[in-house]
Amino acid sequence: MVVFVCEDSFEGILCGVYDAWTSRLGHKNVKLAVDGQYNLEMFADYREAAVSEEKAQKVAQAVRTKISGRAYAWIYRASLSFEPQKADWIYRFLIYGFHIGEKVIGALQIPAVQEVFRLNRSVGNESHLLTEFLRFSELPQKALFAVIGPKNDVTALLMPHFSDRLRGERFIIFDEKRGKAAVHISGMEWYMMTGGEAAQLHELAGRTDSGEYAALWKAFFDSAGIQERTNYVCQRGHLPLRFRPYMTEFQQG
Image 1 (spheres, rainbow, N blue to C red):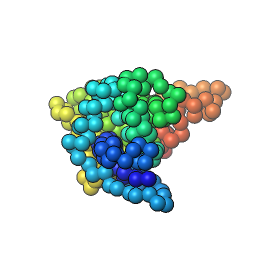
Image 2: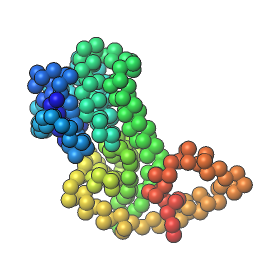
Image 3: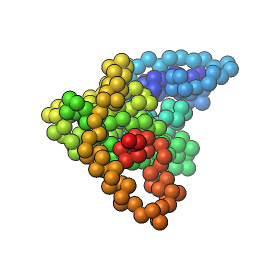
Image 4: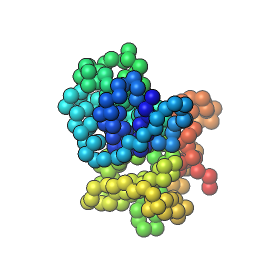
């Protein structure tokens, strides 16, 4: 078995697909794994799938033209999942996709298609929930700042929504689990920051001023509820506990 180790990114996984496919070793004899998210197997040969814009573009174009744009969207969202098997599931999905074309979207009886469908739905659901649960605070520099800690890497999926709603604002969405940030400046396209620059932004989280509006929001949250009808099980179903540490109305003080 030859295992192609991919960078944990959409481009990295596409390059892994390219290297595995062009290796001519046979689909049963190759496997994809995400760097740092796999266990070593005995008698397996591990090869690095180097990231190349040319390779990624070739695979992306082939998916869009030979399968469908919807299949491309599926594998993109699946690549944002936190699950370590995602790269190999995407590869197996594309094997069937290049064989049967756009019909692969409905072939949920195939395990790889079912898994990519599940990842696509899970990532999409979390992104949708965060458009409702994300909370901004204001920095002294008159910019909005939000901290999130999602299971999946959904920051890029959130930005089109908030860039449209807050097109005249300067704001930052910081993913503290992955140490990356999306930055929007009024009148400009948003962009991603990673590494040391993004890490420095995390220090800003302690400098935000929730201000009068946050106090009013907390007061409304506390007063709007009916104590006699409190149902914590129902609350957790609509608002999972993992989102609450990042929400204004659940902050102490």
